[in-house]
Amino acid sequence: MTPKKPIAVKAKTTVKPAPRAWQRMLSGRRLNLLDPSPMDIEIEDIAHGLARVARWNGQTKGPLAFNVAQHSVIVEDICSQLKPDWPPQWRLAALLHDAPEFVIGDMISPFKSALGSEYKDIEHGLTQAIHIRFGIKPVLPESVEKIIKRADRASAYYEAVQLAGFDHGEARKLFGTPRNMLPLTLDVWTADMSGQSYIMRFNALMDELK
View 1 (cartoon, rainbow, N blue to C red):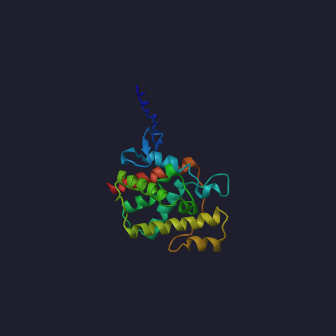
View 2: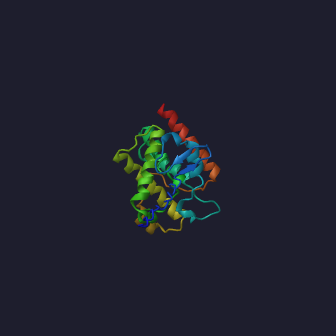
View 3: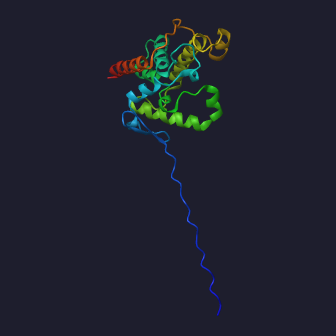
């Protein structure tokens, strides 16, 4: 009698669940960082988060960290000086220019470059969702982007020389010389003051949009 061949038993494969891609906010929203929905974005979460994210990786002078919420209010102020006739939609875009950092943090430019396109894709997706949530065009006109970037670099210049230990020559080389704006003297705000100021500025701009 010919022995029967043993029946091959397939090994069970364990499918690992996909890593969690969402973060729970204090508002109760769960924001998927890889596929963000505008409906899961609240301005209170943005303001709260940005007020607790340190610029310059915390390498600034004084007892308080200079935070992204205060930086964002300053950038909107500078844009208003550079473009006094700007519509509130673009000024709101300036206030929200770093809004994705409320969930992905503020990474210095050299590290962003090292991370490459994946970081930029996540940042871009969050930016578009934030814009849609608050009635801004998902992709800003290039001329608007340029003004916001110019204001961003002007703020960075003053932050660098007043808070982050740069000399003026080094700061000018990296960020350019601020022009057509009032000189800026930085007084670092607390997280609570920064978050409240951010919300107040947001509400004022939204009222202008109505």
